[in-house]
Image (cartoon, rainbow, N blue to C red; front, side):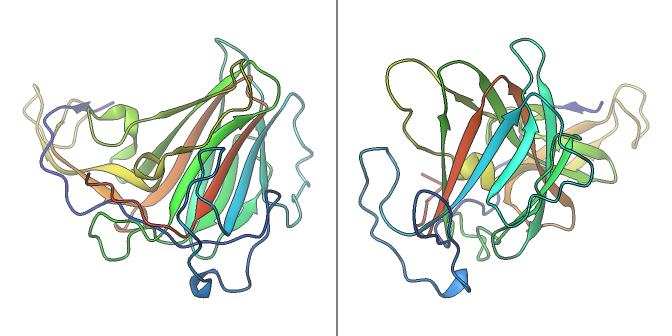
Length: 249
């Protein structure tokens, strides 16, 4: 694994709102890009009010059949895992209207499609994503944005500062509230420059990353994914709202 060190100043990255759905279940408009902007007022559960797209990531103890397609539901099934023994699922990301492309993540890989969150590259998203844990208290999951290029796969945990992994945990004391995670889920820490490590040869495993920028999903010619490590969480609910988030603040 390469050694990651010095960070540079962030490039344009972070932003705000562009999605839709009708209720807490999951409804999508025929053309999300043309959906009217909902009110930005907050609700009692911590999320904005108005139209949204909902994605549920559901932890299950038994793997789904390899032939399972998932239908048209807004959910992805992943391994349940347990405390100290996380079940990892890679959720591959594709640019386009919101849609689950592969709902069976119990084999370790799923797929989700979502729009470019910051097409202008100005640090303000065209839509925002909020997350909360559902189900009985207990269990948690760690989720982070990653990208893969010809040097390997790099996730938020590989770099210091900037985009961070998020922890989704269902605790006692009432229903969990939504938290805005747009910066950490819609951007990646992207290495733009490498230097030779102690062996003096560029392109080997001890190379040093000398400049990291925060870059929106789909803004570079690389593959993107969310890495989901589940330690017993039954349901992580993500909602996408057509409201902006200024990630530079």
